[in-house]
Image 1 (tube, rainbow, N blue to C red):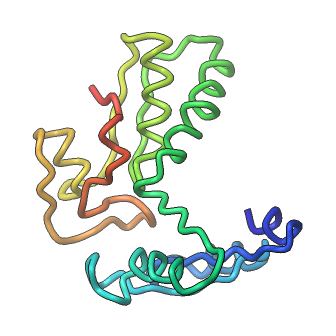
Image 2: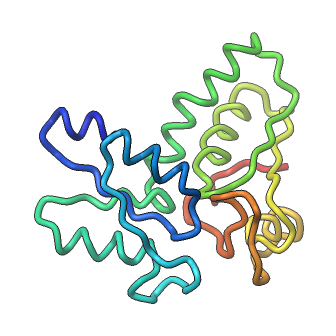
Length: 170
């Protein structure tokens, strides 16, 4: 995105949690993105929480657009149109199951929709850590997250995102 944005005369500003790896930060900067850090030790509603910083900047920077991967329907749709078909094609339709962890929920939601439409018997699973909201939702039917987190960046959220609701998890 940063390269496309630059080619069109735009800039890509990424607001990321302060717990992201230095390698990831260096990588997106090398691709031309401007990186700003938000806090991950505070919750939504705090002015320095990374998602709230991004939402605020949309109002402060003329002509900007907050992508909001956690609620943007284009996120799962992209996986329904690309990831799911790619898996189906590369396996020749011989897919027994699809398991993934959840960050925003877009990959699981979109891919599961596509694969279940191809074969309702495909098993879809969520591989999130115990205590994460998504784990609790799919394991116990309700999303009550406990404090803690994941050692893997981007998974183990403490809340259920709006886009996960369309996921077809067994």
